[in-house]
Length: 152
Image 1 (cartoon, rainbow, N blue to C red):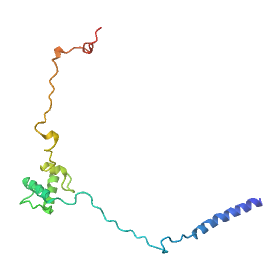
Image 2: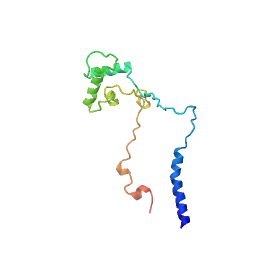
Image 3: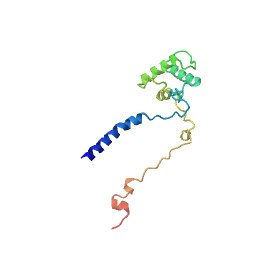
Image 4: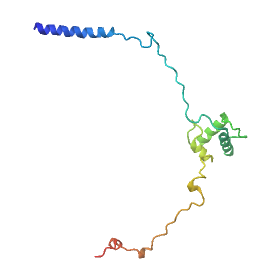
């Protein structure tokens, strides 16, 4: 009984002293100074995608919006507030999103979509092969056995 009590006491003392020893264990600084504050260096935000509309493209969009009576005057080539408002109105009238402009569907509807004139199937020489109609019904075998060519 005394043996068990002694072991229990030693185990309890060991469990109590382990956290106390762990708290006193300090690491030596590796950089030559005791404490350094690690400040987060702000990362520069990398911009992806198109950031502005090319003046030639803006002119083409303005010409189309003027043609469709969403803008007045002459195209300026600048993607200004008047152009954005006209494009937003055009897209809203089509039932499309109005937060991001210009929408690809709106550009296509304005006739400013991608140019497919150089595509393989866009030339006039591309023709579809028309398959001639099958033989008349009376010349075709009537039943499955006749169609298979198997003789009884």
